[in-house]
Amino acid sequence: MMKKRNRTRPAQSLQERLTRFTQNARAAANNLPVGAERHALLQKARDGEAAAAMERLLSSPNPQGPK
Image 1 (cartoon, helix red, strand yellow):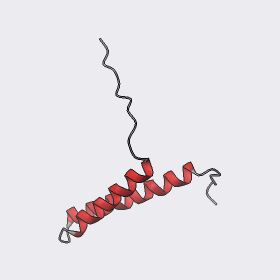
Image 2 (cartoon, rainbow, N blue to C red):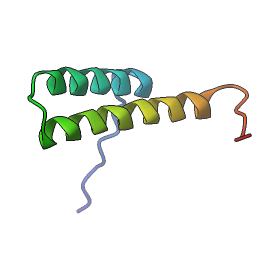
Image 3 (tube, rainbow, N blue to C red):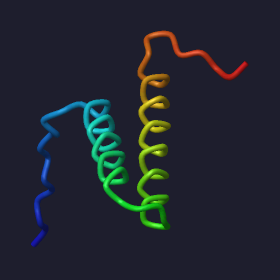
Image 4 (spheres, one colour):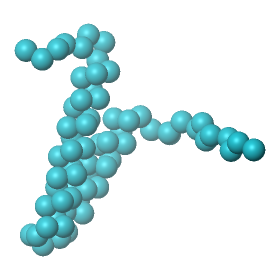
């Protein structure tokens, strides 16, 4: 018997979820002393910002290619 796939949609848009993720990662990093764990959280925040920028670019009505 096959298991049914969960087909619910997220309550928030991808942009909102990426923004919240980035804010949470930065807030958590600010509470840590300088070190590897803080560096990893800041890198995740930068990755989230890059993903949000890509999502904005790809979802724009007139996407432009690289120059």
